[in-house]
Image (cartoon, rainbow, N blue to C red; front, side, top):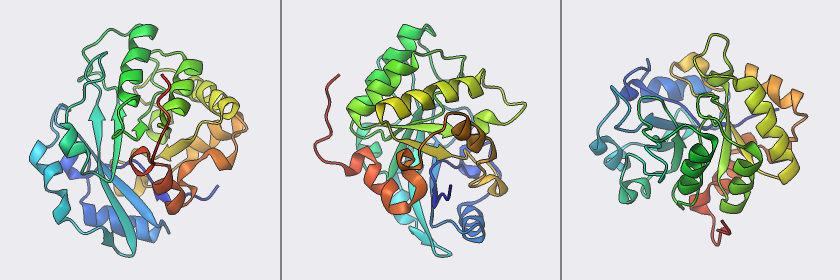
Length: 246
């Protein structure tokens, strides 16, 4: 499966990544990508950057080495109410927004009901496009209900290559991804494939994602980032009249 844009990557700004924006763009060009999303960790992640960074992204060119750059954030879901760590006026200015659960930042309960509630409240927000790595068994969730919410709110679910890398710290990711993908196939939910690259050579590395896609017999038409145009059109912030039935 050819992927034109990687939807999840980090630079030095995130505090625990290793390349600059320009280096990431250059590697994307070398790998034949048409686009990358730079999605720095939002401020509650230890070691990451300040609110002002995200407010000043309008100053950065959206094209380098012939590669389209989308600038966004990987927001931290803070609690069961779906609060995140950037204000809405700032999120609204981004090109793309991912929201994820991270152990240093989430302060809610970790029951299946509480985690689903946290995701639900985030997915109801019209300026959050993607749920990042919902495969982490440390935050258990009912995938049938999660996928239903994704369809009803127009939110994309991520299949994260870093989650699946052997030796990773997230729990039960392969089985959880396969379960999620089977539900997405059943319910017609769109997903994105994100490398979660923290170093340039990991951009568009989907070797472990490909294994779970094959295991779930997942159809290419439900992968949003096979083309740049398809991805941009699939982002909730670019859609009009998305149904909010939940």
